[in-house]
Amino acid sequence: MYQTLDYRCENGVAIARLNRPDKLNAINPAMIAELRELVAAVRADRSVRALVITGAGRAFSAGADIARLVEIKDAGAAIEFFENIQTAYNALEDLDRPTIAAINGLAFGGGCELALACDLRIMADSAALGVPEIKIGALPGAGGTQRLSKMLPPAIARQMIYFGEPLSSASALQHGLVNEVVPAAGVLDEALKWARRLAELPPIALRCAKSLVQAGINADLKTGIEAERAALAFLFTTEDRLEGMNAFLEKRAPKFSGQ
Image (cartoon, rainbow, N blue to C red; front, top):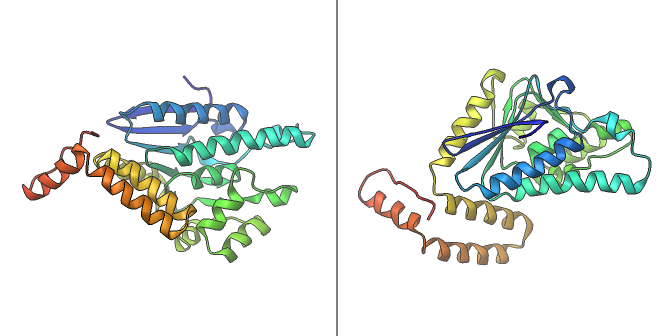
């Protein structure tokens, strides 16, 4: 189905693996297009409860394919390339299912930015996150300047972007850029554990939770609280809300249907 990605889904948990290991999973136009297609396919498949993204081989992704970037000769072509990758990453960020980046190896440039577009990040202790574009006369172009400045203390975001030096796994965890650091061999397994836990939760409530967190990041407090109230009113009309509360009172495990 895909040339630059591997995709499978089992018991509500989907795994998308960047699959250009000979190029350290460098991101080229074909991969961007396929990422966009994959996100659309996941959105259309209600059986998918959570999505894990990881890399084949020893890297998560080394970033944009520099051999492709060298071919860009004018501003118009640059705008087209970066608009495509920004659109794909924005679609991933806006996906109405929880997403987890299993950062199995280095994640630089567009690879780092892809991980940032996910909701949660599990990182190998031997991996590193960075946006080194300044070293080749450019800047992060897939949302990195904006997402890093929202996720990190301003001084640390500036340090990463200005100097182009990566953060170690320990520093990324210290600054809250990742949720957990584990030995490299266990990154995907840990991410799948998290994804399976999410898959057991009520999917409508999870979709609302993701939307509300984004509202809290991007809107003022009053607007966010109003959105929260509206979401709760909606959730009280769902079968899952009734099932969850009845299961609690009856001291049994709930069975959420997504209705």
